[in-house]
Image 1 (cartoon, rainbow, N blue to C red):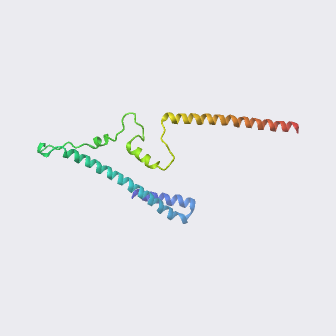
Image 2: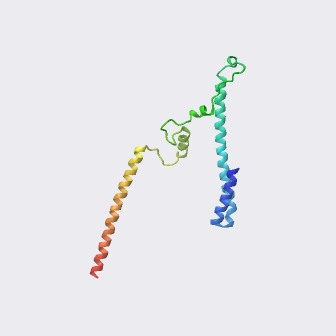
Image 3: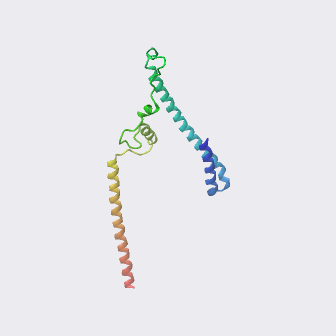
Length: 158
């Protein structure tokens, strides 16, 4: 609800300043709707994750029969940090290496002409761009010099 209220206010004020009073209300309602739907989606993902953690805890609890437990002994349930450890990044992992991020990236880029490249391929591409830009800058310098020489020659002849 807070995201919707904030988006309503921001959408109204930004649109009012640029588009005038006629567009302020529709823009505020649209931005509030988008922000509210986005917040609901995030909340749903979090709820699904918590349900998954609860199922893991219940499964861990059910693997140990109740007859083996003492009256005052509670089963060892995984803590939140233990449950998150399977999603924790190993040392040296980069941002975006998690399975969830990979799945989201695959879904989002399924229809787009984007491919994943390695760091080495990226560096090679950037080096090639750098060489191309340097080459083009040299061509521009030559063209400027030629134009300058032509303009000075025309001034001397006149």
